[in-house]
Image (cartoon, rainbow, N blue to C red; front, side, top):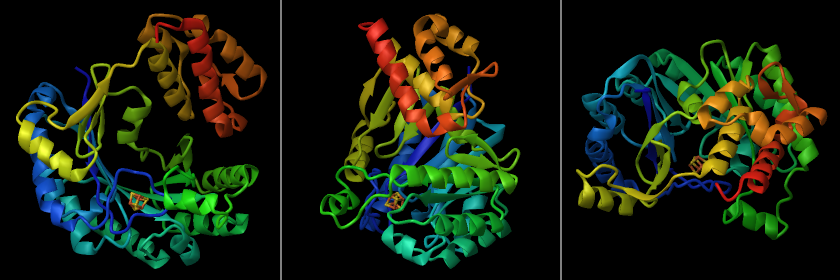
Length: 391
Ligand code: SF4
């Protein structure tokens, strides 16, 4: 059987940032002990799904996984290993925020088996960090990188956000230059988006904040593409650059149709062609695990099996996030139908428009990287029009 990955969600943050719509909560310190125990119980309840598999990667995401004690992380990793061996090159990756990290904790996380750290730097300007409601300073990020190096992590990544209201090109470049100077193995950049229901969306609606013009956001992305390449980082995904050998093996699972088990409140999983989601609120999650374990997937709240149209559209959309694109024969084998037959017209249109190329793999051109959403939407609409109602 193919190796399996595991996603573990930690839904706690010191402060909920005004732009964030992730499943995360502040002010719930009193739940952390019970939550850690529920994670371990959920892993054991999933013994039948883990057994006979090896583990390619474990990803702790959130929320802020570095908000919980390293003991809880160690407990989850150990519980997974009781049922399935880690592959020799397995990656255990954890998202961490400066301001929640100190040296003893980083050493404890490393000892717990975490190999890779993804640090939420977001910006190296104090005013931008304040706008984003982040609790840390630029100096705290630099200290976190230094401590992480000393603790012996194999890969250290920095995440940055661009496209803040009023953000000037030189301010963005300064953040990038400082990030590069810290020497991380991996850099991710994400455009700030205004998500419905967030405090940021309310501020935009009231006219207190004006989002940056999309053309200006695109200019920032282009500038980052040039800077990161010049600094020796290889872009392998729309938002991700790495030094050779340091790409995120865990995230590659999501982009290449790999299977992953969901552990934790609101975690998403993908097993046997079915996508499922755990109950979102940490209190409800703990109660569900206590009530239903040892039945497998004790916290699973909803599940669905994508129809042919959605499965094909998702597959193409995710593969096109990768700079290497995909071989059409992979699609043909996965869906037992030639891509040319179901999507040839869209492919040709996108190639004529200069957003896709065949080299011989199908991939976005540099201009097309800014239009990934549009290309994916066109592909989906075409399949819906030509293949429905099979999807
Ligand atoms: S630290 Fe991250 S997950 Fe937590 S509220 Fe802020 S953006 Fe959301």
